[in-house]
Each structure stands twice: as structure tokens, then as C-alpha cells.
Image (cartoon, rainbow, N blue to C red; front, side, top):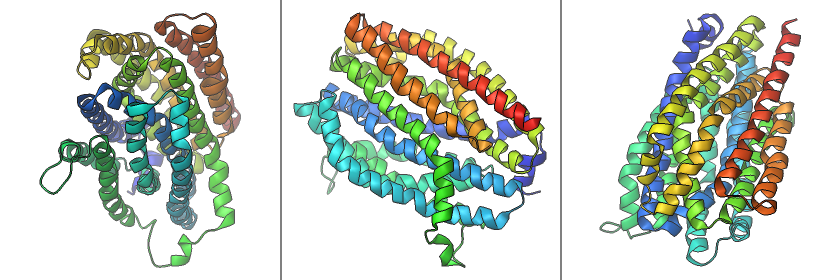
Length: 448
């Protein structure tokens, strides 16, 4: 039985576990990878640590575009495979593996000219600005490798394969442990590069992983070199990819802008608050990993079953994913309330940095349930080819409401740092409740 047949026939709980666990495991190692970067940045200086957090706001734009359009490729290929249209699935795979990297080249050019201006707007200057720009420039040069990997992984996930990407992330974590100190401090003919070494290690690992993922994609036969014309641009196919991918990508872009808005207001409390927020955010991501894995599994299962018109399995996948996600979220809340301060303190001994990081976590842990709801509903809408509302909800929660909440709490009322996150919590829950209700209505209409 082929993997795509299993996606249409095996019990939903089993499929969610089989796909989500490797995805979550890979994301765990990816988050640990980022934590290693955060740890070494803290060893360099607090400015380097804050610079890494600040540069992530722009790096998230790149990740967002790649994620948005890769989810479009997953949905399109999955729908085609579910409908037994293998040739169409093959065409989507060939076009997508060129289309997404082309977007990466465009982002590299844009970022090179505009990222430094954005960092200055967010308050970076002197050594703080220098380390932030040094890190970001090298990441920008390697953007094309990130995008190739997004495209390749989309092809694999559309067939239910999350193990390949897991393997690359596990390799990346251990390679990062070796390469970070090697490039930061230098050895033999390798010069000491400081914060630039963090970025160079990341780009090199992406480059290596690209070849492994290409090999695994070639084994699916969705990508081959028998007809090179399949790789050539096709306006109609590109338009389809854009229509499916732009809501999710714009949603991720609004997340990037939302991060910039938050970073702007966090920076008014000082660079120690920026560093504490950056640490708290990375610690929080560890607990969100299972939810992200469930989201990936949801998209893979739903896209295939929607293409096969098995609508009862589509609805069951969403409800089961939410149930699993809420159970895991409760566990995450308990863990971070017990160990949150200890985890934050491992990255910077500065008591102010620790205080800011802990205050962030004490509020943000209660958002896990809202994030699970958002992740699963976004994957569901993407999988049933109804992605437009994703952007509008993202626009509300990431820009409009976030800007309003942050302005009132920080600028107008001049409240303490912790109240900023209380306002964010209320705003995100309102978005999650609305999107859940909207998704249920869409599914009921389809099933009816």
C-alpha cells in the first residue's frame, strides 16, 4: 500500500501520530539548534544576544514566505494525489521546486538594502547594529538554500513523509554544536568570525541538507529529469501556486510585521528586555513543537482526503488534531511554570534579562491553547483550498489589534512590561475563537 493510500484509509489518530511525531521531533531539534545559537550569542555578548533576537524579526519574513508557499505546494500535490491525478501532482512538484527559490532570490535583494534601515528603526546602533547586520547579511546570502529545502520538504510532506526533514534537522543540530564554536572562535586556517560564524554555520548546514532532501524527493518520482520542460516557468501553474500560497505567506508576513511591532515596543524597555524576550520566545517554542507537528500532519492528511472527497475524514482530522493539541498544551503550561525561570537563566546570568524572560513566559504559556487552535484551523483551510480568511485573521491579530494593544499599554498607559503580554493574550484568543468558528462553518457547508 503506497503512502498516499495510507493517508486515505488508515485511522486518523494513527496517521496523526505517525506524521506528527517525526515532524515534532525534527522541530524539537530545530528549536534546540536555535537555542544553541542563542547560547553562543550570549557567550559573545549581551549585544550579540539582542542582535540575534532582532535579526530574527527579518529572518522570519524569509521563513514565512517559504512556509506559506510550501504549504501551498503540499495542498496542491496532496489534492492531486487524492484525486488520482499523478501527472498534475508531478507538474506541481517540478514548478514548485523552482518557484519558491526564485522568491528567495527576490527576498535576498530586498533584505540586503532594507534590513539595516529596519534595524536602526528598531533602535539598533553602534556595536548592537553592527552584530545584527553582520549576522543578517550572511543569512541573506544563503536564503536560496532555505527556499530549496522548503520546496523539497513540501513534496515529501504531501506524501506523508516527515521523517526525511526530521533527519536533516537532527543532523543540523549536531553539526551546529561542532560548527558554532569552530567558526566563532576559529581553529587552524579558519579565522575567528564571532557572530558571523553563527550565520555561516546555519547556511552551510542548509546547503548540505539540500542534497540529502533532493535525493529523497527523487525517490518519490514526483521530481525527475526525464522531461526538463517540467521545470520551465508556466504562468498558469504559477498563478495557481500564488492563489493558494499568498494568503498563508501574507499571514506569515503579517506575523513578521507583528514581530517588528512587538520588538519596537519591547525595545522601549531597553536592550535587556529585548534579550529577555528573545530567550523567552525560544524557550516557549520548545513547548509549541508538538502543536506544530500536529499542524503539519493535519495539512498532509486533509489535503489528500479532500482531493479524494472523503469529507468525513477531513472533519475528523481537524477535531482529533485539536484534542491532541490541547492535551499537549496543558502539559506545556505545567512544565514552563515549574522550570521556566531555570531555563531562561541558562542563557544569560543578567538578573534583568532573566526577569524580562520569565515575565514573558508566565503570560505566554496560556496562549498555547489559542496557538493550537490557530495552527490546526490554518492547516485545515489550506488543505481544503479555502485559504483566504487566513490572511485576514493574520492581519487582525498580527498588525491591527497588536499595534492598538501595544500603543495603549506601552505608550498611552505606560504600564509595566508584563501587561504588554496580557494584552497580546486577549487579542490572540479573540482571533483563535473566530477562526475556529469560521472553519467549522466552511467544513459543514462542504460536508452538507
